[in-house]
Image (cartoon, rainbow, N blue to C red; front, side, top):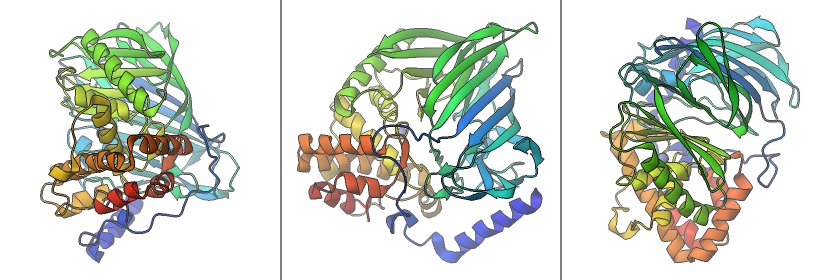
Length: 477
Ligand SMILES: [Zn+2]
């Protein structure tokens, strides 16, 4: 285990010493090879991975025992399996959260695996990559099955996607399992975690065949996908079941939550507030979600999920998006309407149309900021922003982490604000009707896949004004 981790750490150091901190971001250069063999249209990949996931929380909600079964039919030959352990990235690990894999079985047989740092801090006991060499390579179209046993330790009061709060009696688990790191037509994605606030994950849709959350009796559980009922066990715990046809991540919350359900535009929306939340009640949240969703549907088309699960956590300060699920901090949803609409916009940009959040963060953040601005009628004007002196919107997370004194604010000011304003400006120059039609084409053509900047270029190819603006701000090369 140690050897593999050291090897990759050394490789990353070479990359950094080789000058990547002073080079332009790699995603402003030519795009990676275009995706092949991906169907047009909105259907999920028929051969998408099938995942069975189980979380069993400790009585104090401080630890989780996990098990994951993945059936994977790659579209290219593979000689290893690669999973991401995103809870071990610096911003969550430094708060005491840790994901460790203890056992891997491949096609029913015990398999050795490597624990690789890939951006994890030196003092974090486990890395962000789990590599499983296969005894025999697997051809495209063949199915391989992996079973992983893992454990989570949850940091307290973490202002991030995985943590626990003893005061509020709640635990939240998002991207909190070994996430298959495959991209169709491209292969394994091993991009490093970076010490910047923001998402770095990439994942294709999978069928969440079953999600089981075992929690102490009396606790509410918010899941991902459709609720499949509960079952009381004699040991004082309850099994909560969920499933989803096509999601690229999973988010769960367990605890003493005040949960209210409302159907909004045909979507079953559950909002759960932890007991320390003070700024608003569940109905306030549902009212704002209804308003924001209605305006986004007008702009972007039908809501991508049948179910939406929203947890409001006293430990958090902002919002984090997952497919059909959102974590919000304890804010006033009316006053922070922009935040609510932004996170909901991610259901289309990241949920439905995926992207590599580490390599091309603008593909979800600039588009979500744009959609929020248009849906809410906010003014976001490119002409008032320092575009000439700003770094390129198309920078990767490694670029933001490596080149700036204040990477968090530079990343936000550029990718969210300038990137979002550039799309607003592009819509003005091209005309709203033509822009919105091309945007609808982009959503339809890239639904249920992982989009790249090339896909944006293709969708807006007939609108040179749009491509000009995106080049001006360095989103497109
Ligand atoms: Zn966002």
